[in-house]
Each structure stands twice: as structure tokens, then as C-alpha cells.
Figure: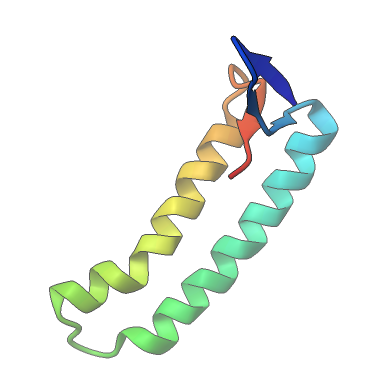
Length: 79
């Protein structure tokens, strides 16, 4: 946890090599599972809305993966 100015606290995960590697494995597994879910639920001719709804979690997982793999990031903020 890091304190910023007066009493504002951020819950962070330090991206040391061990944590980064564990998060990479976790995110890759989550991406695989989410991809399978999309394939099962998408159907032959999905509407744009259905496509966006189903692929949103996968896009977010890829964003997180890119952050974890980027060595310039030292911390990942927890929600």
C-alpha cells in the first residue's frame, strides 16, 4: 500500500519478477478460458452488440496482460 498526499491510499501489487510471472500465467489461462467462452456463445452471425458484449472481457484481459508484461510498470493497482 502506498500513501499519496493526505490519507489517500492505493492498493497496489508490486510487479517484481515472481509476481509478474504468476500474473502472466494467470492471465494467459484466463484469456484461454474467455476465448473458449466466446467461441461457444458467439454463434454464426452475431450482432455487433452481442460481439462487443462477449469480447469486452477478453479485451480487458489482454490490456492487463500487456501491462504486466511491460517491464516499465512496477506496480499494478488493485480495485
